[in-house]
Image (cartoon, rainbow, N blue to C red; front, side):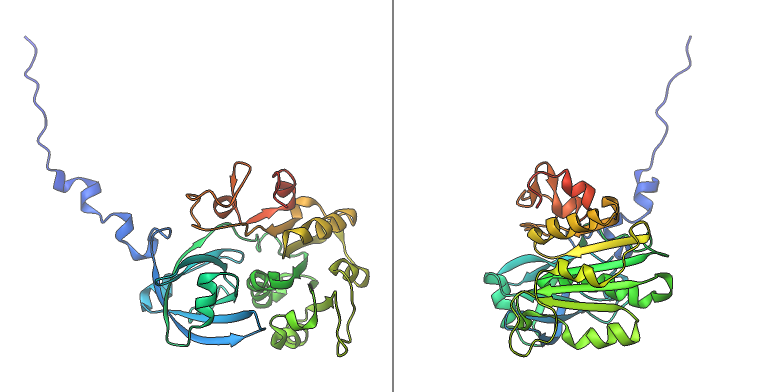
Length: 304
């Protein structure tokens, strides 16, 4: 006769999954897709007639302490009552006091935020997306290339290089705009050059009477620098039409495509790959990007 089988006594309250708090209740590892950080606008800097730089302070001190992002990532900025939109983070990863967002007037929510004053409350979700491999670039030359508003997402890698300057060799910033009035962050140019020993060159397509620098397309600036192709990384931010010409030129100089990195902030809306607005082929640029190496971009149909 077989022994009697009994179900062992079990107290569900003593099971491991019940005795430890669930992950989504821990502030240090909170699910960032749903978490909204309540923020206050503490400063606004008018950069041009279309762009403003907003300093946002996360209200909760503990949330402010744990918030962390990588150069190239973005957040979803919520304007209460008007919706939310994706925006690249333009500040230093080491700045725990506030987050910097450079916003251009381009739609309903961005127009509303441009009318905001200091003290206004907004929300952010994130950070989202992939980032630039700054550690991989250590010990190499770095090209930071921006067109127009592309200097905003490029500013975080610039901060990173500045704060770890001894870990990189020659650093060049190449920046081009339509005309001089559209140039961003002009108040930092001297600091980048004199304090951080970065070679900064600017160019405009349509110079005015006061412009003393070069005129033309941004690729003209490559004539004035020496590039060691196998010891150089490049980060390119700007309108997608610029990627094709700049990256093709870098390719002709011998820089491998997997050492060129671009940011594709294309039609993003939700930041989580749910709305499908940012799809390029079968790729969600908000989830698998926005940072891609150029080899990957070349294999994404209609990416640029």
